[in-house]
Image (cartoon, rainbow, N blue to C red; front, side, top):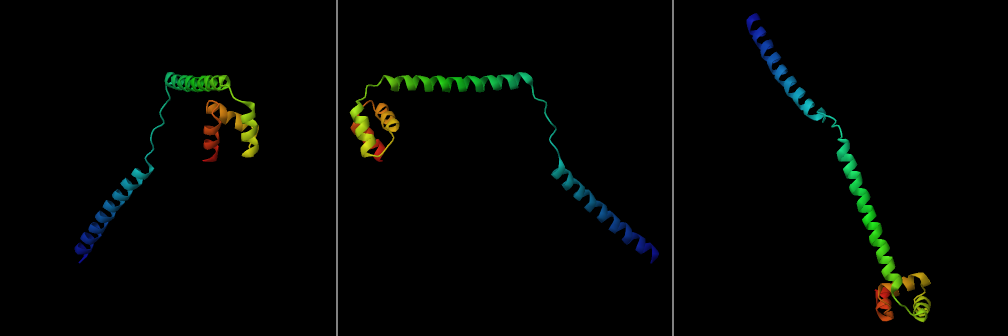
Length: 113
């Protein structure tokens, strides 16, 4: 029986060995690390330049919009009426009137929706 016991022990050891290998592979998959990539400084600089130019373009567009709105002629009486009747700050009433090209009815409709 000693030979049979040795064979059984060898079979258990083989199963344990396979199980350990599978566990090891599973653990390796979980703990695999992506190697740190070194950033290419030119890529970083170009990305930063793109962000800066985008921000500058947005800023310029906003300034142009403000200039357009400032050029719109509005009636100060309309500003007072809208501000008083809708209980708004005069700046909001004026801005809304300018955005609607001085059309008080359109501005009020916009503010009431």
